Amino acid sequence: MTMLSQEQIDEAQLTDWRKLAQGLHARYLVADLAAGARLLAAVAETVDTGDHLRATVGPGYVDLKLISPDAVYRDGDGHDHVVEWVTRPDIELARRIEAVAAEHGARSDTTGIVNVELALDTAQEERLAPFWSALLTGGQEALGRGTIGNDVRDAAGRVPYLWFQETEEHETPRQRFHLDVFVPREHAAERIKAALAAGGELVSEEDGFTILADPDGNKACVSLG
Image (tube, rainbow, N blue to C red; front, top):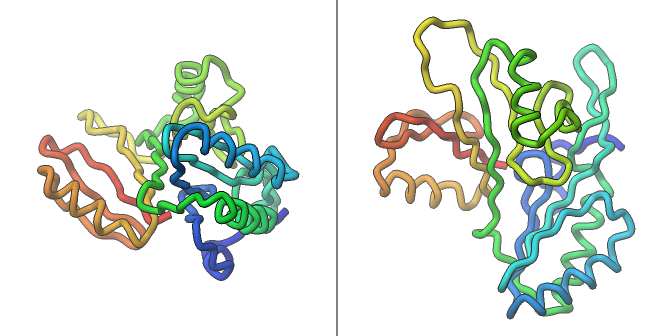
């Protein structure tokens, strides 16, 4: 299945879902844990492709993520790669889940949607990646899973997605890790404002993301989906 662009996802005009990083995310507010379990059970009956859905249930909320494990990405040379990304079936599933949530009286809360990734700046990606896969997940199965590079993506979602940002070799160590915090576009300004009010500093505003720094100068990116 062909991976969808951000424009194609926007054209679907989903009400409750936001595309953050590689997947579609939604949060529904419910009365209690039991209500969340009932909602998830109803959603499970609706979803006929269980490998697309990830769910977390807590007291008062249900967090859902939709992503296709067999999306097809075509690179600049015309070669196809199987990756994890949003495809057309995810859009259809999202619409069906929206209907189920409405029937159960669950309220969408896009302000509560967030996705965090870890990025490691390095000129030694291939040398470092196996270590981080072993350290974070206990093995090498997560290394390059669902990606075209050496990213570490745990199938069970136990740890954040770790990817490697290419940098030049340098003698003096500098910050190598930074956080990529994905939030819905309509809530990005609010998140940035809160971080600045808590002592942060605006480093730069780029196309699709804003770079902030904490009081010690450690940088993080607020990314728009």
